[in-house]
Length: 442
Ligand code: ADP
Ligand code: MG
Ligand code: MG
Ligand code: MG
Ligand code: MG
Image 1 (cartoon, rainbow, N blue to C red):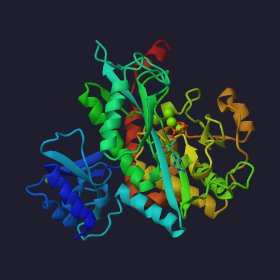
Image 2: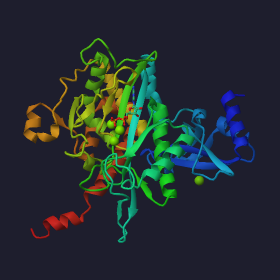
Image 3: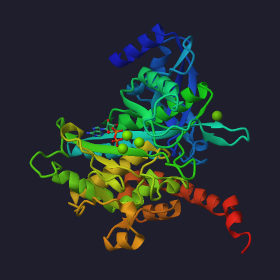
Image 4: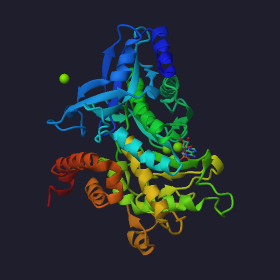
């Protein structure tokens, strides 16, 4: 028997685990799961070997109604015990890969999309690393039943202004039980907004971690009587929540984005990778900023990018190269937000970057000015293009970009495109209070 499986069975026995959750993500990156009651610890062996059949057509973007039977097979490396479930007769979980009933990898599985992209990197000898910074709000309801931020603190504030200190403590302790390596947590810029950073790892492990992170934060905050939201822009006039994606490629344990012999200590490969990210930025938007609401975050003045450019210390550009060198050399993409599906997001970032390296795409000169200080005309005169300003613009850009489409594969592209078009159509017919305020007297 597999050594890892043996260890898992021992853990289940020792901790009185009675439920095994099989988890997968829908096209929005939201976790879905089914729980199998364990009669005895080694029941887990059959579940790992055989998987579990399920109806995929009821999960957003996964399968069509006339071809809906799918097989969820646990990835044995994703075993963990869920800290917010009861300790007695507890619950453990696996994240699953999805197969057809014939046992072939299912091409509509977002996790499978990322695995396929990672193979392209592996073929070139690369490990693709990802360090995400998912931000979120802790909110509560006022006396009128409207959601408001749960505190009025600002960036790096401390108690008693920061009412989230104890909540973040519970989050960090819970994440550590889930084997997260938490690097830092702090209050963010906006009222009620927080950030908890965890250490980068290879992109598959990190994508699993993002799914788990959001699930854990929501569950732990809910237990304390508040609500956590990863909505990109929940409130007008204050910062939204991003999920900056820090990326690097390692080869034989060395960071190939680092080159001590250039003036900036950034390698030519890193510049080509940036070239690829810039070239494909409009199409990437559809995946990295995938909701109607995402584009309300991407407006000038809130540390969120609006322009397709890169810089070093610049937090007004789409891409930033943080000051860290050596192993920590990385490219930060600042447009991504936590409403994205991390499997799809990391897959398209990687393939856009690799396209830049394969085709030696020149990123041009870095931009070191605060772009928010310029007018539209001045930005245009510099030859800098806008990021898409709406979901409509983004999914049409995706339609025209073969590299990004190809990274998704035909099935996931079609499902994603149709769902996003429907989202946009449902949004564009709404009539809001704002419009009555503006236009009632025309
Ligand atoms: P910021 O200054 O943008 O707020 P943070 O310190 O909050 O940055 O987050 C940096 C993230 O980058 C962390 O998740 C960290 O683990 C990650 N990181 C560090 N080195 C690398 C690397 N070589 N590749 C990818 N991610 C990295
Ligand atoms: Mg059923
Ligand atoms: Mg940060
Ligand atoms: Mg932040
Ligand atoms: Mg950042």
